[in-house]
Image: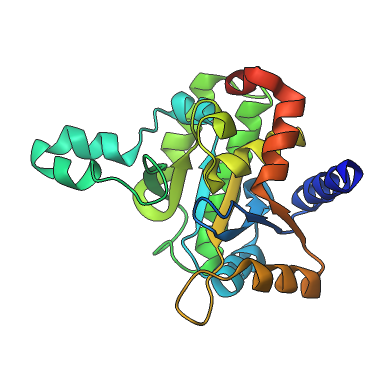
Length: 242
């Protein structure tokens, strides 16, 4: 029912605003994975523990392409292409579920030590989320955004940045785009940390088990199709300008 979808979206947005996790399943025709999302600026070390222990996949930050462009963050495959044509065979191989990867660079905050403990990654993620929020809400200029980023972060690091497609879910329907789109539906900063949920059988956690986990913990779980539908309702074909 439409009302149920609206309630789920509202609950998901409220959870993100309050620093709580939201679970998102992409689709049966794509990765067939459920990721745990947190709004990056709301992350603390307990959030990272949820991503590390309860999800178990790679901890990454999804960002809107406008944020990536303001910071000059390329796709990783672009960096590989610049480095050596000999590596072309690596970054041009097709993926079984998509046309390309969303990976950009990796970062650590300069005040971290190794960058990998929960508190280190929480600092990197939350501070990056904070400055992205400042930029997105026009509280700092593009120039100050870039200056703060280059002063406070180093690369390579232990937190992966994912660059969302220009038209978000209208162009690509991975968790990277679903995360940024969900944030925009709720008028939040499209800077969301996420990690895949893995099962004890060596595979991705099944949707059935992800739903059971969400129910046991009182977390919202959404299917990607709901986010896509609500994003279209709010932004129409202007998605790339959101």
